[in-house]
Each structure stands twice: as structure tokens, then as C-alpha cells.
Length: 42
Image 1 (cartoon, one colour):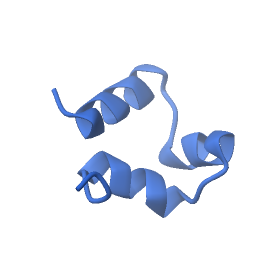
Image 2 (cartoon, one colour; image 1 turned 45 degrees about the vertical axis):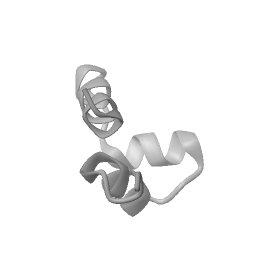
Image 3 (cartoon, rainbow, N blue to C red; image 1 turned 30 degrees about the horizontal axis):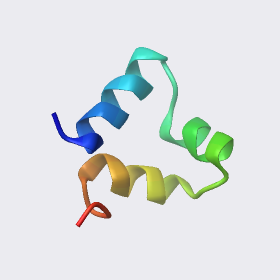
Image 4 (cartoon, rainbow, N blue to C red; image 1 turned 45 degrees about the horizontal axis):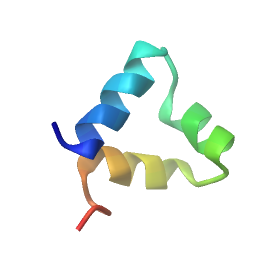
């Protein structure tokens, strides 16, 4: 399983939005979206 799949599954299991994760981590919502799509993992 790839890290982007793990991030998405864990976020959904906790019923959190990308915005909530972003706020908690101090990053932008588009950054979380990019992580989940695997765009920043190369």
C-alpha cells in the first residue's frame, strides 16, 4: 500500500476532512490533497 492510500484511508476512518488535517498539521488544504493523490511523493 502506498503512503497516499494510507493517508486517505486513515483520514476517512477518523471522519476528518482534508481541511481539518491541514489545519492540524499547519499546511494548506491543497497540500493534503496533493499528498492523497500522490503528487508530492516523487
